[in-house]
Picture 1 (cartoon, rainbow, N blue to C red):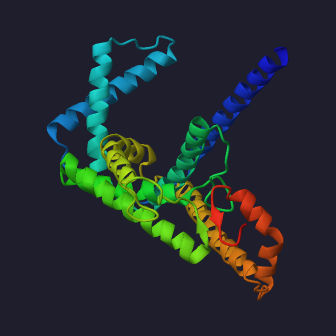
Picture 2 (picture 1 turned 135 degrees about the vertical axis):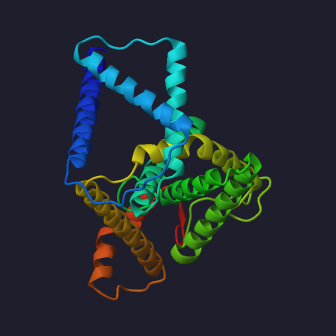
Picture 3 (picture 1 turned 45 degrees about the vertical axis):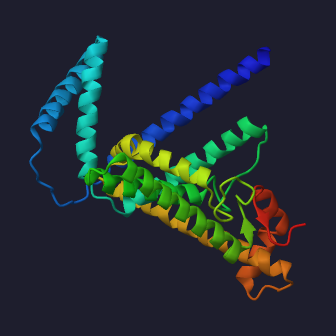
Length: 309
């Protein structure tokens, strides 16, 4: 009992140190040389302008009171007013944000990691199993969720700007989710000889990779994504303000691109080995040496790979 308590305290301390280091790193990224961006001048709606002015005053007052050791204490009604103002300003900012490669890389990264984590937690809760659900050879990533995160965010933003109704958002999310699963599932089996999921036995299955229950799930997820996740996530990501931020995200993009390339190459060599095709060059020899059939089976536990017994 004593050592268990000590382990928990050490784990909590380690997590706190990691959190502090991450915060310090991102603060360092924000202190780099500013980048030049074209100024976007537009007149804010009156309600947004008033909300922004009120929030600015509140934040400055809050910071001052914290400095003198007298934290600001607000009533529940005041907290609701502040939350409403923050939501109004955030929605206006996001609805006019320009989405580029910088935001897409971060969306892909966040979706890949968060989706993988949620899927593994769900597997443990529903089946009691701990199974590797990785989608790439390097890192804790599941690219299906990464692409889904980026697509849902872009489409949600377009629908928000057009004041789409809830059923239009629901239908669009169903179509996007269904196409994503169909294209990804078919591509994995055709090009890589791997099957990550199979809905053939699911009631309402349309194809091997698309089923009505999951289309409904995509539709519900789209409603939540458009109304809650998109404004919060894009506001959190924001736009780059320093060269350090741009370079850091560019490095992430190159790394993820290499990860996707290596994963495709490893599955291609796995299929070639199963058909008795020897490596044709030094790169394929290196893949066979470091990414053997045993490694691929252990890494991608949830996939059925062609050639496995």
